[in-house]
Each structure stands twice: as structure tokens, then as C-alpha cells.
Length: 383
Image (cartoon, rainbow, N blue to C red; front, top):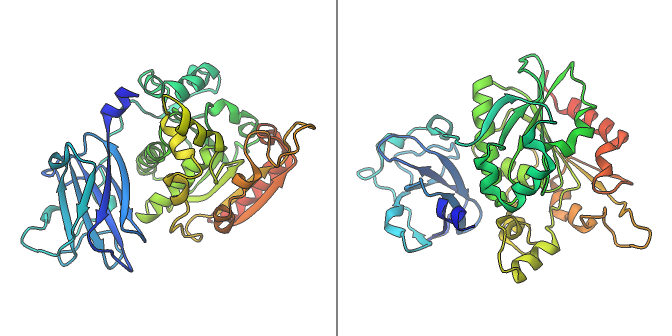
């Protein structure tokens, strides 16, 4: 945990004056002289935002995106923040002003996509694997939960292909949940029509914060979509993986950087958080980052569907309601409460909702669920 803390910095940015009718775009910059950004975020519909970033980020360029083109214009109010001035502080008060004399001209008129230059270390992209390979072992699932940095250093993280890339086939990306790897999704993966689709899996250390993981997924998909010129893709996520994917979609829709994603489907995902994570945050002597984001009262859960436009990427919400225990009459799937799976905001943003008489793991073997998934893919594909 100390090592992880040394690799990232957390800041709370607050606007001195609220902005209405437009977003404030935040460009993350390593070297102000290179005219490149390493990431982005935005303040939408509020006056502040919490950021957790690599300590390689040294500047933040904020601007009020009045014309909503995700591009800094010479007449737009901005602020350039040198993070070296905040080494001992985490609270940053931001004042946006239009000033053509001091505006960083190398970033003016440049869209987010043209500025992004993402460097990915310790991450495999496009490596062809089998789900029986070491990165997907159960031991590595536990390693990713309790020792996420070791998981990364031992080269287990990445977006893997289960076959050689074929430009004629639509990719389906599978994303696992907490204390798990892509191997847990094998029952679903085996049913995919390999003549039409190619299967990719995102393997990640599940003990990291969901914000960092979803931004990692965004960086990986941005890289692979550009390298292979991806035009269509479906994403299927189980359990906590649904939160990772939903937060990725929320962020990338801001920059219109995921137009190639036809659909997302989430299975048994705790959109309302997990009560035991809240207890871990309150009582554990060591708090895992992921527990903070799974806390039902935490900022991550509260912000997950904020300003999410239903029309951007169709969402299929699938849930289970069999606790697997005749004695237990609680409304859950044996792991996640129904009230969390069917969080109201998640329902409002879902294109379709289906429930199955299955528990948290058996749902992945359900033939009706797979048929429903297949039909949803077809409905959302472009000719």
C-alpha cells in the first residue's frame, strides 16, 4: 500500500466560480513542452472533482468547453496548474480566466484525441493466450486482490486475445470481477460464435481503485482501437467488472473516444455498492483501495451514473436472484444484494434488463442469458 501511494497522487479540484451549461475539461500533462496529454477528465454539473493520477503528471490544463468540442479555443477561460506548487497540498482552488497572452498556444485548437499520447508499462496488449495460461490462475486472482502491485510487476495485466487478430470479426471484450481473472468467464466465452466474433479478455489486479482500473481500461482500449482500426466492439462484464466498464464508458463518452463500442452488458454487478466494503473501510487496519470505491456511501458509487447519457452506448443489465441457500431468505444472488444489482440509476440508464434464477456464478452458465446476450449484440451492431 505504501508503494502504491508513492506511485500516485490524489487531488481535489474545486472551481472558484461554478460553470453552468458546459463541462470543464481537465487535460493531464507530463511535459508541458511536448504538446501531449497523458489523460483527461472533466468537471460536469458540479464545482469539484477528485483526481487520482500517476505522479508522472506534472501539469493540469483546465478549460471551460463552451462550444462542447473538447478543444481549447483561444477565447475560452482556462487555468494551467503546475503540480510542483502543490507538493504538500491536496486541495486546489481553480480560477478560470480567458487570457490570449498566457494561454499555452501549443494546446489551442487541438482536440483530445489528437493530443493523447498514452504510454503503457507493465501491460500486455494483443498477446495471444489460452485461459489455462498462468495470468489467469486462481492464485493470481488472489494476488491481484491482495497484492495488486506484485500482480502488475509479474506481468499478469493486459488486454489479451484468445486467437490471432482477424479484421473480419467483431471483438467481444470480457471483464472479470473482484478476486477473479478472465478464467471465471470461460463458460460464457466457450459459447461465443467464433466464426463471427473474436474474444478478448481484460485481466487486471482487482485490489486497485476502480477509478484507476477504469482509466487503465480506457488507455488500453484507446491504444488497441487505434492500432487495429476497430470499428465495432461489444463489452461483457461480470460482478465488479461492470462498475469498471460503466465508469470507463462514462469517461470516454466525454471525449467521444469510444464510439466504436456497440454495447456493454453487465452481469450481477453491484451498482449500489457492497455493504461489507463499507465495513472494511470503517474497521480494517489496512484499507484496500477497491473497498473505498465499493462503499455504498462513497463518491465512486454516487458519481457512477452522473451525467451518463443513455443514448451514447446501449447497456444491457442482467441480474441473478437465487441466493443458493434455502435457509437464507435475503434478496440476493448469494453474493450481491438485489437492491445493489438493481440500483435505480442503473435501471434508468439500461436499454434492457433481464433477471435469471441463478446465483452469482451459476448465472455465467445460463443458456437463456447467453441467447439474450447474443440477440443484444445483433441489435446494436452496425451494418
